[in-house]
Image 1 (tube, rainbow, N blue to C red):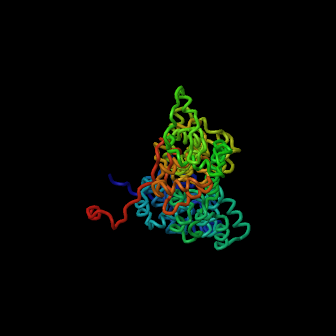
Image 2: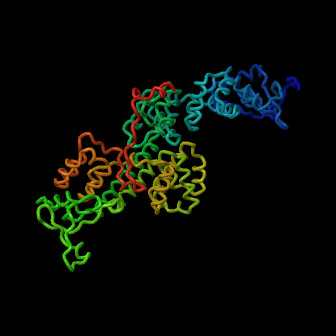
Length: 541
């Protein structure tokens, strides 16, 4: 199909309407000069139009159109070229016109880049090719498209420089306008603006939270360095709201973990006489009892007329000649009873951290919670109190309809952060611990990431129970039976210190059965064999 030849004609300005011109700002001084020129010489270069219903839309020549309106009024006639064009052809011509004439601002190019990218189905390489730009220039302009309208206008009007805009593009949109006011009010140059931003950014190296998501975040200064010539130093976060939220969440989890552990320790504290072994009598008794609770000495001989019940209640002679009642059996179940609160609190913390770091898993947990009717168990204030950090400082005070709009406008990254926070809140608040355990299993949550054997954990147990933990964890085998028996004969505090500081034995990665979900001891993860010891066939592969 042949494209119709363009038509050259004159048209009254009243039949001409504005098109989709990427240019937003028109310099007033240059406009006045063009009006004076048109009044003196007329419009020498025809305005390029395309049909649009009953009127004609401008493709190229809006500055001439604006100046003509002022010089002639709406009834004035101007020379035009009318051409049938698609939306994409019109956009191509408009961008070429602006690039060839008075230089458009960087933000005008940014808006044009967004439209081009949409026309190319988000193919950046194709958009850059059709614009005639390098890929780096396209990426820079798309980053500037995130600037607030006020900052864009300031750059259009040349009240700030490109360096200012690049620095402002590195901070959240809701903070840009206030920063712009400071720049303009104080007359800050680019260097001083950079110094100001450095003082309000956060050092990622000092963060107490998991920084996995930060590696791909646009507010990571490392990402900004790849885009802009002007940027803050590497290793900094330029989104203080997000940084503060992650910090508060991590600290809240740590505080709640400590609080629950201390509460559980107080509730499960052994009787006051548990350590009453100053004379060594209790130590000797401990040495004579194995994990089944059976006495290592021969059972007492039953005298004629004595019942079995009476025998079991009789005192049993010890090595020192003293007597003691039969001690209760130490089992996985009995030892786990002392640590149920700690185990629950620690697993909730581990799951909360896992969901906070993985929006996809948090999304699954939220859906399961909603479909099972337990999502409402999240405490009302848990997320409501953090909405200002999660969404925006003004969010809590907005009308409900406005809150809908705010949530709808969240970027993909912000929405992922909100989902993660909701998932973490569910892990902490859901009433049934079985749900926490099921989610932890489904997502392969590893308790080793948040907990390991320490003095606080061991303090809650009796010597018999400590011996049980030492045996299942491999410490008795590491030390040898006789050496551990000698250690067991010391005071409880010295016993715990000796268990924790045994040369060549690492507690890291060992999960006593009392802390696992299935009641089975969890050995430390197997370490990969050094490369030099790998089979030849594996190296060849």
